[in-house]
Amino acid sequence: MKFFIDTANLDHIKTAQDLGILDGVTTNPSLMAKEGITGNDAVKAHYKAICDIVDGDVSAEVISTTYDEMIAEAHVLAALDPKIVVKVPITVDGLKVIKTLASEGIRTNCTLIFSPGQALLAAKAGATYVSPFLGRLDDICQDGLNLIEEIREIFDNYDFTTEILAASIRSPLHITYCAKLGADVVTSPLDSILRLLKHPLTDNGLAQFIKDSSNLK
Ligand code: G3P
View 1 (cartoon, protein in one colour):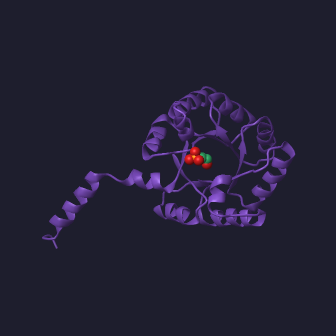
View 2 (cartoon, rainbow, N blue to C red):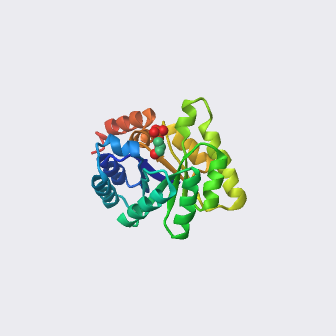
View 3 (cartoon, rainbow, N blue to C red):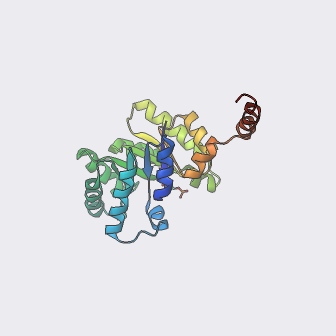
């Protein structure tokens, strides 16, 4: 399973990259705004800065909603760096954009996926990734993990090469469950990745080993 970090924060991206387990980055307009980035030039510079840090794919989301505008934006984003994957919402126009970009060899991440049917359409259109939002389903008392399971079954039925990129991760448990269910990628905030490392018995065991090793020197 690939690990992506879901942030536009350069320090968090560097920390995850230094861990040696990072396969890519996902961003969205809200995450970019959270970093205080404003204006088209600043946005492009920020995507370039992210691409300079990571070795893998970097999802950059379009902010328009009509076919023509999204295609124009996608071309600008894709030209920034070969690592860029254009993130497109699952709408009627979005689906057409994915189809066109696929025919041009531009990779896409179809976002805001909340149902298996949406994922099926995105895969059919040629999306590189689909991003089901687990946490936001959990937030409204629906089973986000069940969505991963359903999409996995559908994609396997037809050998779709579209990768399932589990997003809107709220906890380290989400990550391990996604791995069990066969998600291809999990994108998560740094906090959940770091918490995956932690176990009190590891801390206690290491403290004991350090104590006992004092007589071995
Ligand atoms: O990048 C998309 C997704 O991961 C958003 O997560 O926490 O805003 O639901 P969240």
